Length: 293
Image (cartoon, rainbow, N blue to C red; front, side, top):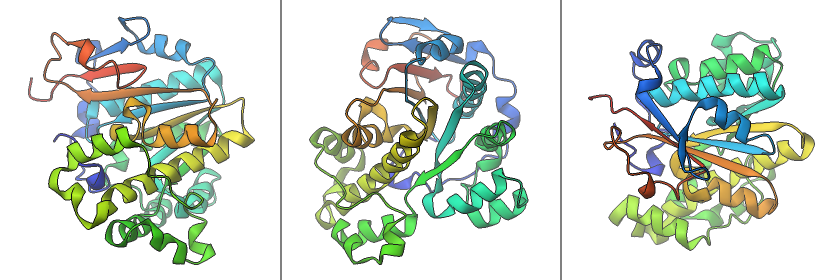
């Protein structure tokens, strides 16, 4: 299944074969392109390239088994090289941070965490290995995403409705007002959404920006307290491709923050990639072999 819409990114159908298939991934199943160096590289080269980086974004397609395998491998290599590498996830919502912290500290069981923290349906196969790495290494896991009930409110009634929420609710979101004035990002969003993007005064784009701004705020808040420690942020690649979306919102909070982004996806031209068509997307492009090839 291809990426369909940013507004569908939380509507996941878990693939029961995802984890077992990922175990058989080898180097022939993916290609990593360093945009600056204009050459293919290895995961170890990506690790070396982020020595002076504050936040490394990994933009994924949510059901790409190869991509999940690679982000887990990369996270392990980053910890081995840099030690303190904190994990930030679109897949947990901000109002679940306390539950997640309790699990990481060993106060509650995994089953209780999964019941109360509402991880995505493919948590077991895709994200659990990284959360467990963070747990065993005493590292933070940032529940970065805006609660979907508030994103749904914006998609129905617009971002101004957030002002009417009580302070106890707004604490789970980025500080208001939510910025929605990135014309290039809006153009890309409209191209993906088609006719739906023009309905309801573009509330859908405002909802998208609510996700982006909240993730950026959570990343920034953690970074301010741990400036010498890398943050590894995972999200759907629409949120970080072209250094727009969440990356753009983060740079508005701190212009000089050092960010690198990876865009990882399955590509039909995998066997003979036309790298030039991808190079604006990120600092590193990872192509995974299509599942039907």
